[in-house]
Length: 173
Image (cartoon, rainbow, N blue to C red):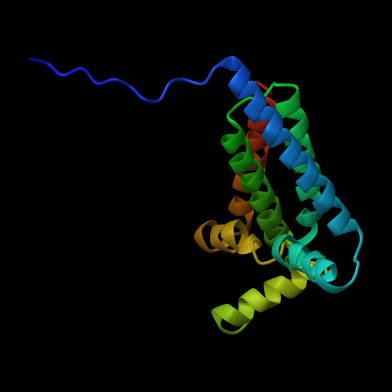
């Protein structure tokens, strides 16, 4: 005898998918507004610490985090996403990391010295002062320069940024 497996997980209906997308859109929109305000207004106390932390991590790209989340909210509300909500989030993060990293690649006058932890501190300071890509710029910026050199890092970075923008916006060739 063959045992038949009854699937306990059914495929979500179109209404359930739409409802989930609307929930994500509200979350993205609220987070986008708060993060936009946090980057534009220095504030005080915890708000100020978070303001500096955003710039220390992402550099000038911190200004883009809120608008990118608002864009994702609008795309989910219009139900015109090019990929799943999670994929859009990962693409957006990759875009921010590439932009942050390419900022470090373009910063020829940036000097990083000392141990790894000292370099991370220096990247944080450059990001906070808006003269570098922040700590997270090391993911693409420092790695790509070490592996390919500055010119190749710029070329690859620009091509990847364009490709991710095309994926996010649903643009074709």
